[in-house]
Amino acid sequence: MSGSDADDARHPQPGPGTQESAPADTAVAVPTDTPPGDGSGAAPEAADGPAPGPARAKLPVPPRLARFLVLFAVFVCAACGLVYELALVALGSYLLGNTITQASIVLSVMVFAMGVGSLASKRLQARSALSFALIEGLLSLIGGLSVLLLYASFAWFSLYGPALILIAFVIGALIGAEIPLLMTLIQKIREEDAATAVADLFAADYVGGLIGGLAFPFLLLPLLGLPKGALTVGALNAVVGVAIVLWLFRSELTRGGRLLLAAGLALVVVVLAVAFVGSDRFETNARGALYRDPIVHAERTDYQEIVVTESFDGTDTRLFLNGDLQFSSLDEYRYHESLVHPAMTGRRGEVLLLGGGDGLALREVLRYDDVRRVTLVDLDPAVVELSRTDPTIRGLNDDAFADPRVDVVHEDAFNWLRDNGHKYDAVIVDMPDGEDVATSKLYTVEFYSLMRHAMADGALASVQAGSPFFAADAYWSVGSALTEAGLATTPYNVDVPSFGNWGFYMAADDDTAPELELPEDHPELRFLDAAMLDAAQVFPKDRRPDGAKASSLLHPYIIGYHEEGWEGY
Image (cartoon, rainbow, N blue to C red):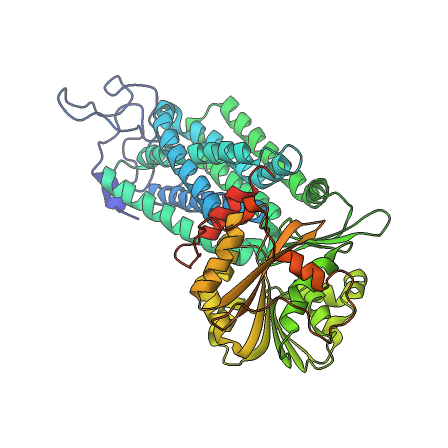
């Protein structure tokens, strides 16, 4: 706080029509619509003096406490505003991936809109208290409902991009109008130097932003989830932002204005409460619209959204992570046989499996009796737990996680490789595509260099690398990264109906590209044979290498290659 009770003594004394000797810490009522010098009680300014500031409001509490309450409202509103921003970024990352793009869109649109809102607020200064309350009510309603509105636009209307820009702009404009109006309200409490008032307002605003930014990932998301977290913050925003005006600045409002704000506050809280109660059903219905088959399991973990669907006739079970298909029970064997068995040609006593929490690649590895140990590194324990316990998935992976030869590690594969000092006879990389920041690092020169250090002499590695048809540059970028990491590679591709054309790489720490073949003692396979592997090394003319760059941590080209490649499909 700046100033003290003594500051009030330095203000002009009240004129006729007011209490003659008001205590220093008590507000003085001054009409707000009467110019100075006309009997209102305010001292007139000299003709060539500065323009008068806002007339003081009649307050129910001493000015120091009133000022504290306004700054507290600034703090809460700032925290809520940052939560709205983070919620929009998080939802975009969940639905579309590429956190950098989503964050850039949301933040740039909101910052621009804040400037627009700040300019527009100049027209609202005459009724600053009422305007601030109305803005907070609208901000609470739109910000609180923003996640549900965007999810609906994505699930039912395919208008996520335009809806995101519109909602981000509206929220930004409303946030931008807050500070100028709050500055006016501060001056209505006690006139003070503008620099002091701005410093205090911004300090409260920035501290509120800090608390909101920390509360979002560590409190709201774990306890309430994204939709309910936004709705709860919206209700808090409404109660604090509107109630502070209804109580502290009630003298600035007409009776009709007070009734309007009270009714509006009640309506906003009721709408948000109803949305809170119905958010689970809404999410279930919206999620169901995204998938062809009925959802039989859905959960959001600290890392991703897990969805399992099953066709009505029970013949097709599918696993989705953040909306991306991981397997279909109809044809997953094509993918997993192609990924695993070529890497089992050499020694295979100890096998490293990076990813593959569904246990399907693990199933193929364990079909070799001479495999002594398999280390499976998967970030999300919820995926592995689902694969251990869900009867359908457990049946698909032949209860692979119950095999005593399997050690499961729940860590980020990149970080785990940095600390790993063990060598493996075969390495199999079954990671989600590098479409966003979180997964793109798993397709970089640095990652494959770490993988190379985990390979024993003569070891083979197989890497899933995406679709050479739908995202050709992304696929060949993986090959470039493997080569720059010092590995010799053999590219190959197969058709998996649920995925389309899909590609892999065999890699060896050698000067010669490894031969693509099956082990002589391979188990009975449903899809793969020698002829299929020969054909798999042929790529159509329009999908052959065309200068795709290797991705690195500082230059994740693969993200852009995926975005360009999948556009239109």
